[in-house]
Length: 357
Ligand code: IPM
Ligand code: MN
Image 1 (tube, rainbow, N blue to C red):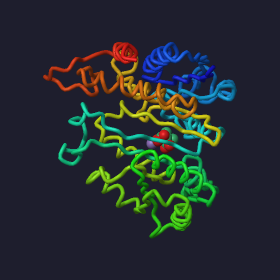
Image 2: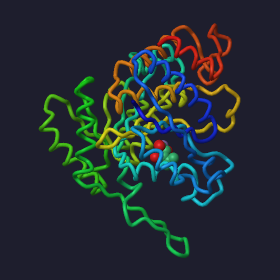
Image 3: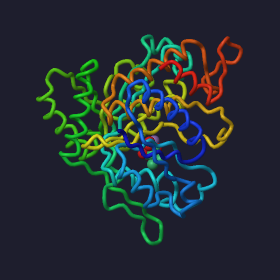
Image 4: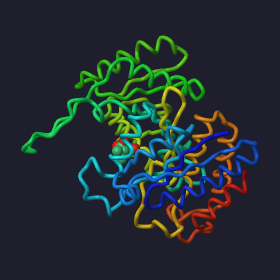
């Protein structure tokens, strides 16, 4: 049996989550695998119901599960709270730290039928796009100490720090992934300026000796930002630190045309994982049954792949989505006005995907 902690969160979270569960139930039938879902509040709704974005009970629910399926958190209602109480920071960062989810995997893929939705002209992505980010998630400038604001609030301080073991473990996973793909890793750093980047580069270069069948390249982060919007096809697996990964993966995400399409996985040493869409809560369209559920459904696919070892089921979901898009079904965010595409609602998209499995 698979025990899943379901944390739908705010905005469009609950309605897209319903579709992911619909699809998981279909997978459950087909593969004779039982899933047990335990729901818990997180983010703004948890602030409203329990006074904190990450209640202890929610953490316990997650501790008792094999994986967390996460929706999204935040919204205008909670925007003016002090930073540490805000849904995003107050829920996601502590969850990442608590479960030691050091490895954030963000596949950036253009489904063929959506090529024209990319923010790049098609001539820049002749072969579509298929990149995977391996972003270090529990270290770097996000968590380094000291981290403080002076009493008079005139100076703010963060510490960017990386040590060899942290770099080593994320890089290993990136190399392992590259072996199953086109055997190419680009490590992104700022070794021309930052000391922690020098250690980053030295560590991964040393580790590379164990992976000599994989090609390793190094790139400064500013150049990587440029290359991503100039010639993204040169990348396959990108491995980088917490903040660089945050920024670059958002830029890369837009190359696919919609944030509503992209899942992510955050995993630890024991394959426990938190699975969530990259996009936010989209408060402007929440509750209207028009949001794109695909990122949430793909996040469930990543959960099947990385936590439950059900790669075939994950591929089933991914193929079902590709097929549905090929048939012209679109939610509003990826719909071309005046085309012969078929505009569908959130729940219809969920139905279509599960029917294909
Ligand atoms: C992300 C988000 C988070 C981050 C925020 C909400 C704390 O932007 O998952 O990329 O910066 O890591
Ligand atoms: Mn981000």
